[in-house]
Length: 215
Ligand SMILES: [Cu+2]
Image (cartoon, rainbow, N blue to C red; front, side, top):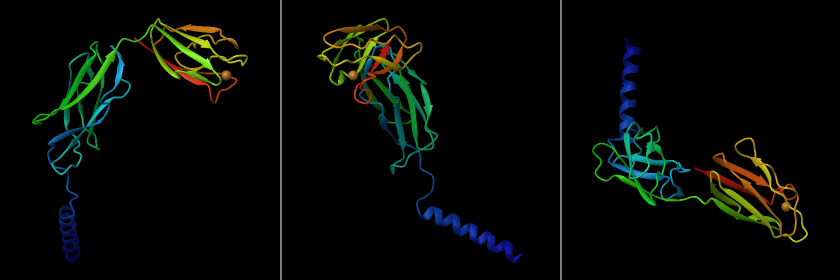
């Protein structure tokens, strides 16, 4: 009998202490703050590289889990169109960008007065891209080309030999260049969408680059 009463008393004090120290659950959400993916520039009808995310907050600025966020895009589309905030109050979606230059994606939940708005920029990918091969770098190091398009490397390296050797990407990897110097060129036409990385085997730590192939 006595033991049971002591346990009840301790539990009651413990619950009171939690409330008094501000550790109670967050209140209903009143705000959505952008937490990632705003202001990206990418290519028409290709998913943005960084997902869009928001954080739901209560009036004290505490993250609120379990909030259903609805996403809407002015162009293209978002997947999923609804997502629920996780334990950190964060919900996210992927924007497929669509075919307009300037586009917005809004995020809201039922009862929210001001939706969060993301602005993204679309453009047409190039079908022919040039990269300079010099001592000892590829410029630009990272480039993008449309599927079916061609990247042409032009050597400006005097008598020093370099090569373009693929390291990773959709398989099978394209053919590598020979070892070349002077003012020679080498081209690859890309079919498969994805990101290819390459380097020069003579200068692998310095000379590296990537080609991202988009739709
Ligand atoms: Cu090299």
